[in-house]
Image 1 (cartoon, rainbow, N blue to C red):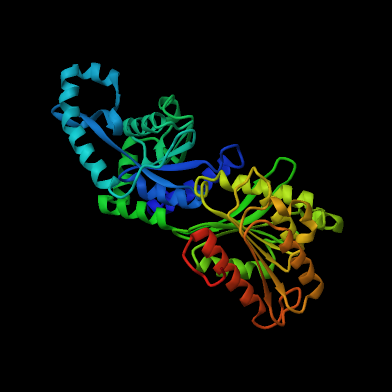
Image 2 (image 1 turned 30 degrees about the vertical axis):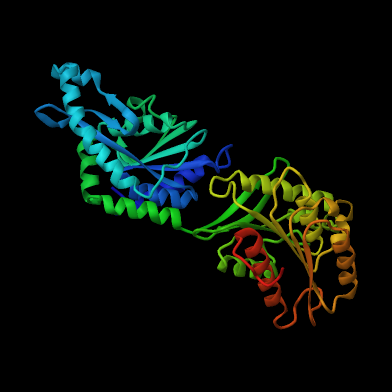
Length: 435
């Protein structure tokens, strides 16, 4: 065996799954389910690699009467039961034998569910891809039961992924899942048992801790956003217990690499806000300067990316904000006016809102316009734009700052102003002094 522990095998398994899932439809709608208890540490590492939520499925083996070491089936949450009917017949067992065995195991299963799900609500699987993870498959009974639970909970696609399994396991497991993946296959079921023993026993306390840690972990993910005609690259960071997400739109189209936006994003994350920095334009498109001023193109891209973001299971329903700079601010304001997205706050840094003049009266999100005191032409354009807007808005002048806010302390002032504005309108954290 080539894995030292469950975490190591989970990391390898997660990387394999990331390649397999690729950019197929629904790639962002994955939930990882660890088979309790030994499968949960493996699943936690898989979930971390995929940037997906982690949940647990609780199952129990059914042993034959008077021969508990012989597995004749398994039971799971919600009344799920899987039986090896051929083995039952060969052992001469009847329904009453199975019922008696199930009664005892069902009581143990319910106790486990109560312990493991305390303060850990079930993740919704309806219409999503469920990746069922275990450390190994021997008889396949518990894996079948776990997959059955995922289907019963509404998963549209089930992937069974394990550290190790017998040769040709996917053939005799046919029908349990839609896809199968094992890091290593072996000739002997005894080798699977040996592997699990080498991994050591997993306790209920460890499972609960992993579930809590997964729910509270920060996500820092490089993303590729497929808009059909173009793929845009970005970086999504969601702090633990984040309270809203700010999408950045930079004037050059390359907000993912902008040192000024990167600085502001880092300060926003300190306040518990998620951030998405991405390239509004591809490298080839940036070569044509006309694209930088094509506000219709930039705003359409921003709207599409916002929809993509809102469809992610770890973001959907969160309060969203836009931070735009220069022509990116015009794109942000025009996108905020689009009725197909719900934006809760906008901040413009040295922006050109005049380029979105025809849509400013449709913006409903509270908007903060930040302009350098030594940027007179842009300052006048922002004054005119503020007068045209019907939404709550504020024009804030940073004394001594020029258009790029490169003066000492100028960008820090922008970050603090943006943090306070978003905290007020995304976090609803109370008075910030900017009202």
